[in-house]
Amino acid sequence: MKNLSLLVCLTLPFAAHAGPQEACAYSVAMDGVSCLVMERGKITHEQYAKSGGPDKTWGLASGTKSFSGVAAAAAVQDGLFKLDDRVSDILTEWQADGRKDITIRQLLSLTSGIKTAKPGWGSLRIDYADAIALPLEYAPGTHYAYGQAPFQIFAAMLERKLNGEAYQSYLQRRYLDALGIKLIMRERRLGSGDPSWGGGGSLSARDWAKFGEFVRQGGRWNGSQWVDAAALTQNFEGSKAHGGYGLTWWLKPLKSATVPLSGTTENATDFYKGGADSLPVTKVWMAAGAGKQRLYILPERNLVAVRQTSSMLLGEKSGFSDVEFLRVLLAP
Image 1 (tube, rainbow, N blue to C red):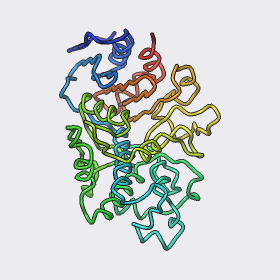
Image 2: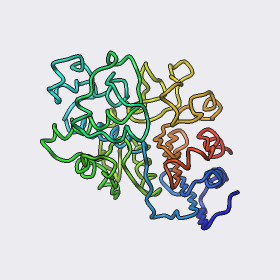
Image 3: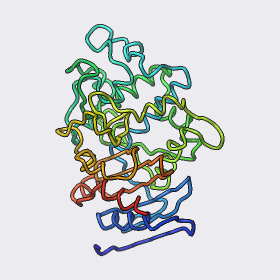
């Protein structure tokens, strides 16, 4: 294992097996700074290395995207829209061209057909207005394309529906405040000052895990249902264009599903190259960001796991494998 300037390892007495400790040890060996495992809502193991710590926040990169899928379920509960409503019902400037039939579901599943930049740092530098102005490149629903613009469009659409209330304010009051979480959004990458909803969030491992536990429980917290349960469930259904990507979440796809492997799934490493088939679970829900920032939800095992690195670039070079982490975590 690499030399570590600090290693804090907390294993609680009710941990059911060695998997969490071994998975976190693997994460640390692969440049991880934070690793935390929850079972049935209780932390069973957490491990911090180098400058990591229980209250230390790290950038989530594209792990930020999944907050929008849950926000959509909150908006459905509020009666603001349905997932299959057209975006152009709210962004009326889209009614004059081929974008008029794009649905909110297609926007969040990255199958809208909107022309979007390839993944990379430059694609983060897009404000709401420029995202809304992007033209149609493919027929809606026919093509999957990973990028930041759809999340900027979703934020702008929701703010317009909310008569100008900031998207972050809506997230906080609708479910994050109930969880005791403050999502830190960075604007410095965007010249316009619009937050980057495709990759600008930061959280501690504990708070990101708490968000994951909220999702695992179907949007319930302290006895209250905070988002529409059916809409949240649809976050975890793949599309015809990409069976391994739902509404802002990466998924373990069915063997028969279409999963494009070129140009769209680099962030998920080996997850869609056959390795996930060896895992002893049928459902994996994953929020994934550059630098191998990860939130995993394993509903069949009542498990939530988080691992973080200190750099958006360092983690990409570590050789970290999602399948190996989960294989060790799930070992008896």
